[in-house]
Image (cartoon, rainbow, N blue to C red; front, side, top):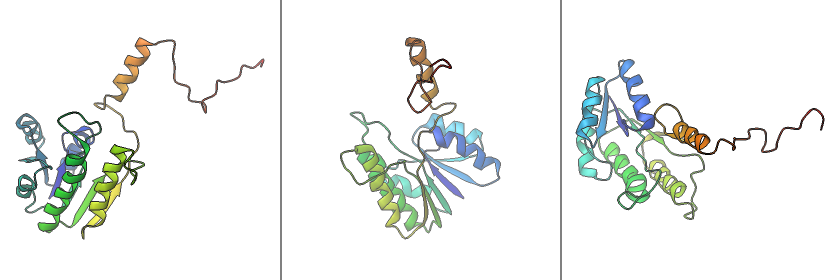
Length: 183
C-alpha cells in the first residue's frame, strides 16, 4: 500500500493515476470531499486528513508500506504559511509513518533547499528535509527544480505575459542577443 500526501496537487495528480495503473494499492490523504470523489473514480482510496494535524493523519497509515509526501505550500498567504504545512506538516507525516511501521518514505523537497532563514520557502523545505533525515525511516529526498506541464499554471502565465507584452521575448542564448551575419 502506498500513501500519497498531496495526491491532488500538480505532481500528485500526475503520479497517482500512474501508480494506480501499475496495480499498486494507492491511498491518498485528502481534505476535500470533491477531490475524494475524483480519486475514487481512479481506483484510489481517499482518506480524510490533513498534514497539519497529526491525529487526522494516523487513520491513513495502517497497512501502508510506502509514503510519498508531496504536500507543500509554495506561496504564503494570511491563512496558509510555510511553517505549519511544509515544516510541521512534514514532521507530522514522518512521526505518523514511523509510528505505523512504514518501510519507505519519499519526500519531494525543492532545489536549493538550505538552512538560511532569509529565504523562507527554501528554508522551510530544508527544515522538512531535516525532519526526514533525522527519522529512522528508509528515505529518499528528491529536489526538483521548476516543474511545468498541463495543470501547472506556468505555461498559462507565460502565454499571458507574451500576449500582454508581445514585444518582449525570452532570450535563451546565454542572455546575449545573437549577432547577425554581418556583424
